[in-house]
Image (cartoon, rainbow, N blue to C red; front, side, top):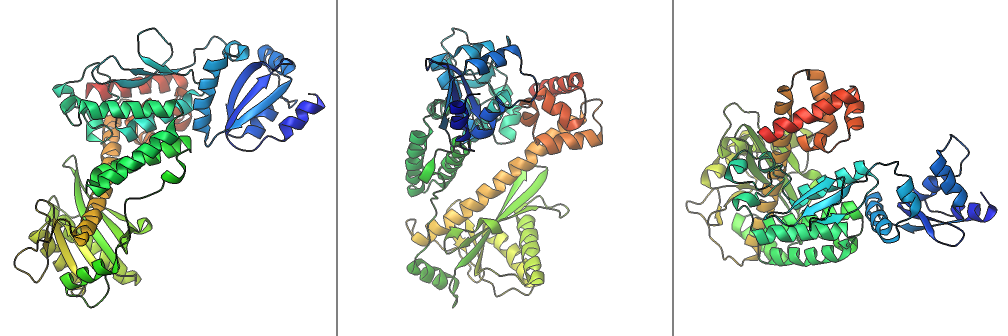
Length: 487
């Protein structure tokens, strides 16, 4: 390597990006991506190992190397693909060794467009993105975006009501069932367009648009939609690292002194209501009861103090028993550990849920803690010492605050339910495969978490994680795929 080239490479940064190798005339002859630019480019010129003939020819022809910095390795992957398509460097073609690099295909011809990874680009009017050189990273990226945008990834060309009833993706909450009217065709097409914007590298504009939509949904009190959009913003930010100032903003806001006074008056409390804890219960496939508790301080979520529960009580398959157990477990532990008690407790439900919460607090000697229930149907507030529910104006700032907290508890419970369901279904499927014993089943669960985790993994990765040869790993993956689509 000449001194000029050595000097240039020594100044490369230790961050993700793409590098372009050029010949004496300045023509780009190779484009690559790297998680750490300085290490990757230097590795070509270190005298260790024996590069193959094509790589050696590339090194000899390289007269200059430049780079472009990206936010993440995934963003580098997307940029690399775009630049390879633009410049068609000769060594990107020569170094493939006759392997076909994958593309992301979006079949826009059907009623419900599907996103998949393919090895060949054909003229069928579908949208293609690529080629991509890092297959493993590409699979992880697409799987993550599909789940976050809740796009269908089932194996059916045109799913109907039968497929909907047996749909694993619907059960674990990673698809909104457009095939059965879970969302409109227009909404589904919009999600497809958003994913395509990410693959085109236009994530900044997408995030800005989504952030505006999130604020609009929150202002309209559609907190479930606002939370979904917020999660999508986080997903795009994690993939591209380019959502900037928009990524971590929230639609929660601190409540005012007036709202605090209104709460104190409602609860007949002399103490300021700064810390609120809220509980919600959820079922997973009607077999596993789970619940959540969220903690808010002055109207803002205190996520490090969120808690999740697997309900252990015998026969606890109703909201009342579940609320009773969660409240008891939460405050028994706080009392034992001398932790900070909340200024108010809220449970999702009506009079019966409230009574069960009050019983648990009474057993712990905490009967003086303010507690209420918020019933979703009519947005009524139940208090321990009142016969009839309290109804306050729908545009009341206090009601909106309580709704935000209640909805956040519900979101947290549902997410936990999906996690438990996904892992349970995966474990159940593995039990039906011959030759997979308890130890290997546990390794699969820990390594890949879900069915999709295995199906999106490389054969070598499966082989390494569960200590089997590649042939056995390939057969295992095929069997899991067969059982999944049969169900």
